[in-house]
Length: 244
Image (cartoon, rainbow, N blue to C red):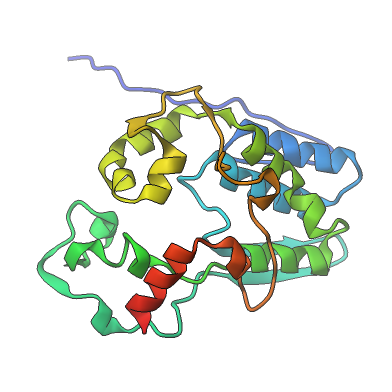
């Protein structure tokens, strides 16, 4: 018996002077433009990373973390670990385990026990201290040639002007429709009056009820991502009530 198998192919691309690899073509284009303007690989990577966080919110953004390894001709470079950290007041007793494994949630790949009400992955008790901004800004300070304002400018423009929703993001949002509907803040950004966005719909990551310059303030102070005055008082008060 003959059977057919799916074949997934990508065109092989080579370059002599540089290359930018990203999950979204617009983010890659932003990185290429940085190189064309005379920026180095770190400038390009950081600008691409910030743009990707806007274009693909289902992946890593300024609320996450990561690792970066840099190597230049001549031996200069190094590694930056900017993973997320647990809040100082967090403790193990905050998360009650169920008597079953998490077979459907985010932990299913690791055979971890299920946490009651998914408190470790949903809602205020799932919030960790982000490391992305601290890590990427550190990379710019050590090895870059542009400043943080220049690096985030393309991402800010995308968030303000909007962009066509990628099909992969639309699919992910549909899978998490119920979860997004639970919280007014996520419903406001990722749903239209409670309904799902469709692929290619223009998604704007800035609330239309706020001034456009109030999108986000990136500041590397104590690994904070945003200034306290730019965070919803309701969110801050609710989080404090949980931890104190």
